[in-house]
Length: 356
Image 1 (tube, rainbow, N blue to C red):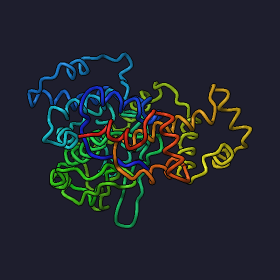
Image 2 (cartoon, rainbow, N blue to C red; image 1 turned 180 degrees about the horizontal axis):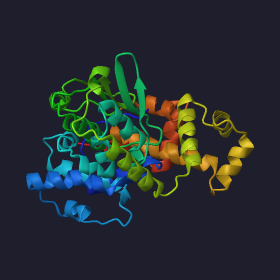
Image 3 (cartoon, one colour; image 1 turned 90 degrees about the vertical axis):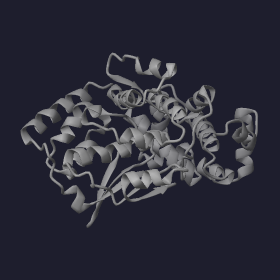
Image 4 (tube, rainbow, N blue to C red; image 1 turned 90 degrees about the horizontal axis):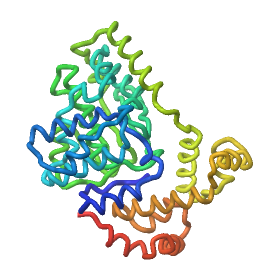
């Protein structure tokens, strides 16, 4: 799976290039506009002045949802103003339940930390779309992880998510010492590792396969300060009702993107292989794509092109590894394809789109 390099984009043009090259799947998703409360609170506390950020924060969204790319852009601008800090960790520390809207209050009134995590995992689409988390419970540990099925997020966004989750659990349990056993981020090791380990109070791994967080089962057994079964049921109904009002997703396409991504990495990204993975005939897969005005080869090309640009710009792995991730048996074939797409070699593109 793709790995992030912790970095700051150099300017607005670079950020727009990043947005254009980010995975086509995730970039089309939305996020609850209440999440901007993080940034508004931080800007207010630190007296940060940025006309471009103020413009973003002033936007209003009729349905309470905003494109996830605007969230990424706001984080990018804020990071450019706070280059000596990890903005994601700083924002996460300020988390309050109302930043999560109705879901925050549902979590707050859960019976214990485990129930709070389950409510978060079950209804996280209320906050954002994209890869849904999975809870894996073992004898002594419980892990929440996010498979990268639908594309790339950003380091700052992932850090805000995990730091915010830990801050929330500390707040609602009344135990400021509550800490995970370990945390994993997909982006590469940043320069300020002490900031991460000091906040999470545990080992933090970078370059992990998935974004993930693990708690001991003793920790998730902690009761919550404002546990209220009756109010919790009412809030759950409210969250379910609001999720039901969200636009319907094309689940078939999400399923398709997941399997074509896996097929690419296995080195066999063909219609027949993807159809087999999806338990349907090649004819059926062709028909269902055709109903949406889509063609398999065009989608494969777009995914390869966008993922190649993203991985190279992140400078997180070698060109030979990128070629394998995109389903090319030889790096030379990947180099030729890349030059056709962008008019330059992968190495030239890496220099032209480098991060600071």
